[in-house]
Length: 501
Image (cartoon, rainbow, N blue to C red; front, side, top):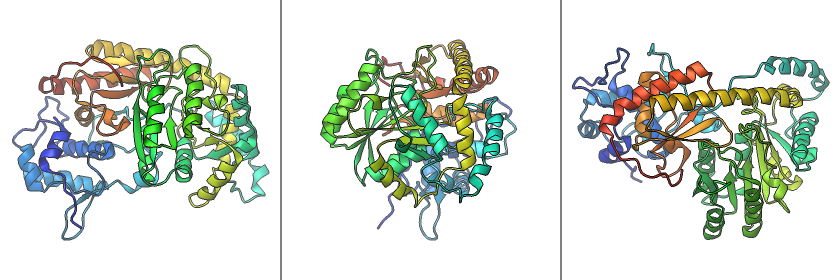
């Protein structure tokens, strides 16, 4: 069967104003540290691959065609394709075109965000602030948590150490926190995982089939979109509507989409949605549970951000507290609350589903590391103190980010909810992908808006996490402003009214 090929014109259109280059193939810039055009072009194509606009398995245009369309030398295109091959984004076979691929570590570890090609290269001397992650450094108590875990480890050394369900002490601690939030939970309703993303993948393998529809809020966590696609299912976006009082979620839209598509599964992030920070109120949670019952749809609720409320108000009760049966499954994680390097998460559901999940899990891994589970037990026991301090830190960092954006990028519109770790910024022009490709040349890495949606949505948006220290955040915004200024003279486009995310 013939290989599908992306046309040079189509690729050029999707790349947008990736970077102007001079006649020698060098990036036009007054900065002494400017990089060659092939690096910026490779990064632009990489972003299209992760956005899904350069689908896996299709071939890129010939070097001659793309060089002619972009107005650069064949050498620039040759170098671009070579760099993409070296980093696993192209596969070449003798006698056929190079086809789009993903690096092996990205294919097999959905929890690992794909690093920029520019970030992977050591050629640059420019200090780089990585704004592609919404995650904080470890709290002061992390070393103590592992010291306590090490002291408790001997009790487990007489066993084989592989427990696919999770150690009882941790399951008890997680169940206790659910109960304290208004959802009575027993330890046997908890399955400990290698993070929320791992839990989602296990659930997708059990609850979906190829070509099945899975409803998602839009925008949403990009690795969840890729996980849905990985199992052959199809994400069905339901737009967030921030103008909806007290909600942000189009519940009527969710109900209609479930009925019209016959979706049997939804993945939603009602606790400080990533990237918008929006929070679904109690009435919305009750209605969402009712929708799940009416449509016989299982709703997977991602509570990874649930501890990060920044308005001073208490947490909302879990959505599952409004369920009358097993229609709501909850996944959570220690990575956002405590540390991304702590690969511990959980699924709260009924015992029959846990049994099915264990059958799938045995083909993938044999359990979560005991040391990490014991460390998480200690952190959960001291969660109030740790989280109060981290929430204060996030509030201060968010204020610094918002203030600096107002100074440096006054025509950007910022939207943020009651918590979470990021601000969702609307740009005056649809240049998100181009900005993410340009930003590394100014010392900052960004995740383009289309990564958080499907079908190329959100070119007018970009996520700005506020998880770095204040001085770094201010430097990052200044770098973003410099990158944006390089694009805006050639990307003027009137700002349209803000109607939805």
